[in-house]
Length: 187
Image (cartoon, rainbow, N blue to C red):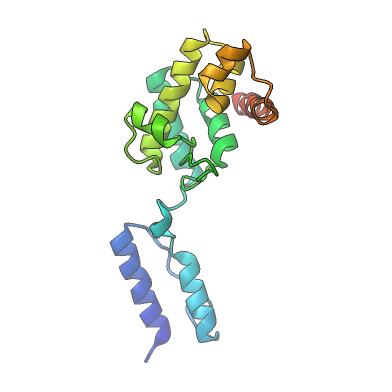
């Protein structure tokens, strides 16, 4: 029985089922001169955690989603990337303690209002999140600082306080997003 061949066949079958392009294991990871436990570990490290949502995305794929949606909604792509960086660190499977989901951390109610049926689907999430920030930019007359504050604390809080709410989390969030925004604008 050739365990390395069996693991390779299983890896290929998983790739077929999940639609993932899993690279074949290098010979040393496939079991040549290694223990069975090492082979299993190597094979498992190649398999995406599909049960927890979509596989991690390559930066180029996120860049493409951001570009397409930013162009469609008329939002600076650097701002969309800054929000994604601060909301989820580019993890499409991110979930906050309050239940916000996906790359742009859409709350379930907000996602539903935006027509997003699966907030963990990166395409839907970036579409909905970009649409949402566009609405906030319009609502706050293009003031990026207020729109970003509203993205975090809600537009009602920004209106109530006539600016960035006095919440430590929101104030830090606004500064972090604006710093990221400046960084992405220069790239």
